[in-house]
Image (cartoon, rainbow, N blue to C red; front, side, top):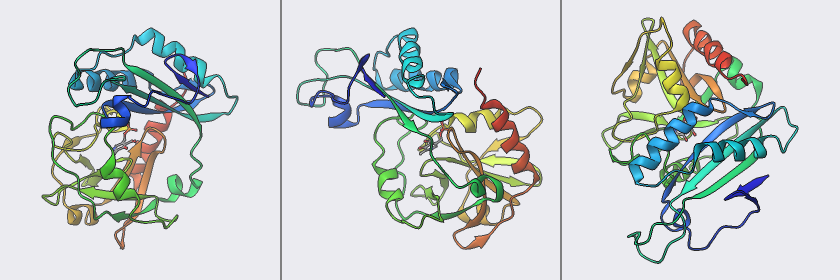
Length: 271
Ligand SMILES: Cc1ncc(COP(=O)(O)O)c(C=O)c1O
């Protein structure tokens, strides 16, 4: 089911600024038993993104009611909810002269059917040629401009490689095309800084706050990753995937990755 500004449908205005400029933000949430998971965290990032872009966010209670309607429209045990908020429809030109209500699009998708093996035994990961541009104003938020990820994800089609790492122009690893990345070194977690580019993932945030686990934000090169004790990826739909091969170098999914995966799984329950 798709709801556009509260009405079932599939069509938006050809003048919508989300379409013209990527002028908006989005969230992708896992849905279990008709309940969108980690709702408050996703709403917090959506509202931070709207504030950063100067978009007046839709009323939270209304968005929650619409999400409930969309999520309960299917009886599937699991699904994916995508929420898109754009600045709305406007005249030609970058400047928004007359403010209009934001456009809300809520769409329910079938659950992403990744092989069980990815979470159990780890994934193969490649390194993308497409680099992330630096832009602190847009870094961290989940804005609609995703051309770098689109180009990066279209660099390969091997189904056995579900993710590619993206670097910035200074050769720092930032994240995957659809995930954040962590390394384990001597029992401690490290994750790249996302204040210049990249997305501050919801699951990344949860992992960084896990009690009893030390985690530092730092610059990491590809060689830091390949020489790490463990490497793993995370996002709101996949949870945690251990990395078993990175650009041809073998890695072993380890105990800390397993522990984090269980911790994230336990948080991803309907409540
Ligand atoms: C580029 C990128 N980075 C990181 C993430 C992880 O974000 P989250 O944990 O909020 O799902 C995603 C998720 O879609 C993403 O597309």
